[in-house]
Image (spheres, rainbow, N blue to C red):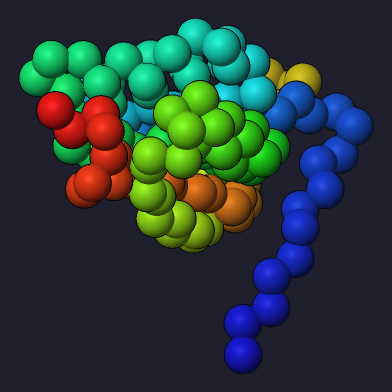
Length: 133
């Protein structure tokens, strides 16, 4: 059995959170963060689904605190498009890495890992959608 313990940094250290690794960015992927412009991402998702040469599927990604915002984005998009979308939700766990920077320059840089929840929501128009013209 594996036991996980949280490492609590000492007061004499600073933690620098590394950016999570992402696969190559695809134009149909929307990455949601706590600081994302909700309205901008909502209209980007709508544009990707509806414009000429539209994408059959877009994927909305959220991590940690942005999971709720990702879900709200899909539900608001569904309301905006009058329930003409279908979506598939996948959840998971992502390993993140933090650098622990000591205040003393003589000490080595340390690394700590932690887990964070993630969500990936595939969104597409319904087959019989009046948007499929």
